[in-house]
Amino acid sequence: MNVSKALTIAGSDSGGGAGIQADLKTFQELGVYGMSALTAVTAQNTLGVQGVYPVSIEGINDQIDAIGQDLGTNAVKTGMLHSSEVIEAVSEKIMEYQFPNLVVDPVMVAKGGAKLLQDEAVETLVNRLIPLAAVVTPNLPEAEIITNRKIQSLDDKKEAARQIIESGAVSVVMKGGHEETAEVTDLFYDGETFLELTSPRINTRHTHGTGCTFSSAIAAELARGNDLDKAVIQAKSFIRAAIEHPLEIGAGHGPTNHWAYKQQIRGVQP
Ligand SMILES: Nc1ncnc2c1ncn2[C@@H]1O[C@H](COP(=O)(O)OP(=O)(O)O)[C@@H](O)[C@H]1O
Ligand SMILES: Cc1ncc(COP(=O)(O)OP(=O)(O)O)c(N)n1
Image (cartoon, rainbow, N blue to C red; front, top):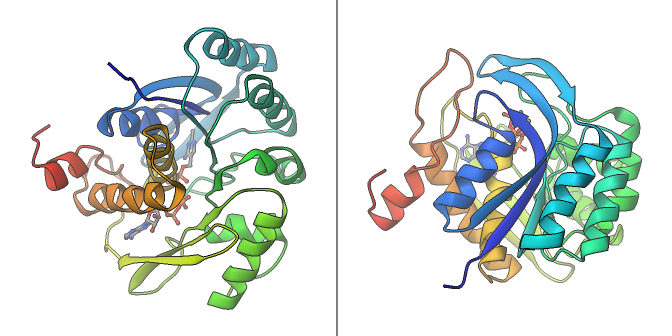
């Protein structure tokens, strides 16, 4: 049996909606064998982040070595990396093992406002990790920080996308979840063509972990052998289904529903 494998290098969300937990659920739902290297433990639920406990660099390196020296992977997704030192270490390991299909989700701030990346680490992200990426998936506030420019119009988004490609990434998806428009448009750019992926904005407070789920769905589709544009289109369908059928658990911003895609698109019950 030909097994597609994907590795997530990210933080743990004890509430299960974002981070490593969202990534592994997404990999599983998309038929990909999931592996993880934990960068930090967070105490977190639908109300916010109550604590952040970083894993040591040695601990992170050991986890990646364990995978690199035995299992290998068809794709890697990075999420919460927390500090400059972690980004340096993870970039080194990705180069050492020449892991293919790197999806960089430049996680900076959780929806409740908690900082998941130290300010001084942005430069390292841009200079060390983004140049290794097959695709970078910033939301609009993250794209503004990465490019150090205000993004207000479609032209601004295109300029920012070009700038991110100039940093060395193969492609970028600028996510539109944070806009206040009736439709949500994610802008994909691969250095040649812009592709606007538009869907109706779903009116819900249950959007915890949307970015993690979207980027890990891209990684899963790349691990399965899809091209970048197809992987992003499939991931958009996956996250749309997951937001459209929320689980409605917790008193705050609840998680998305990772089962929904299979139920809706493939007619399979959880
Ligand atoms: N209310 C919504 N309705 C439909 N799609 C959404 C909604 N919010 C986010 N998305 C989708 O979820 C994905 C993640 O977007 P976004 O919320 O901007 O990222 P992040 O969680 O990193 O802030 C994107 O594909 C975006 O289009
Ligand atoms: C451990 C951990 N990693 C990443 C995030 C951010 O996830 P995201 O998908 O951007 O969703 P929100 O937090 O913005 O809802 C996180 N919260 N925790």
